Image (cartoon, rainbow, N blue to C red; front, side, top):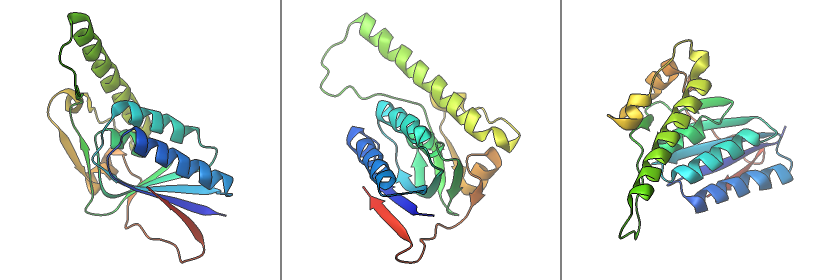
Length: 185
């Protein structure tokens, strides 16, 4: 077995998503038979986050995700790509209303505003679908749709276990030197 661990702490954007993807691809090329993603993120860009989620789901080897601090917003979607999911005791998960920044936009017409609303609604529904599918093993459905459009919700590691976000609340441990390959962003 060749375990490779990708370490990621930071926001989700196109650059960070590409870096995580590239680390995973390099791990595969270097003979990884098992991959872990140790992550802490405040979330970020929805487009980059969903692209990274679907990439991680396509990997031809087991993926373990481990919350090592806080996993928030679209970071939760990325985290849920793991076949096995863990969180250190004392960590949290945050689900909150989706939003977009408008950058340097000075004006928009009705059609563009309507398009943005439709995209936000679409992303909220696919976020909820990913959540329900990933947490089904818990035996009870946690409806987060209201948290994606209304009040935010924080899950402690213990609450995440009950909701099926994680399989176990356990401290992350790095294997002894030489037995693992590490990648970082």
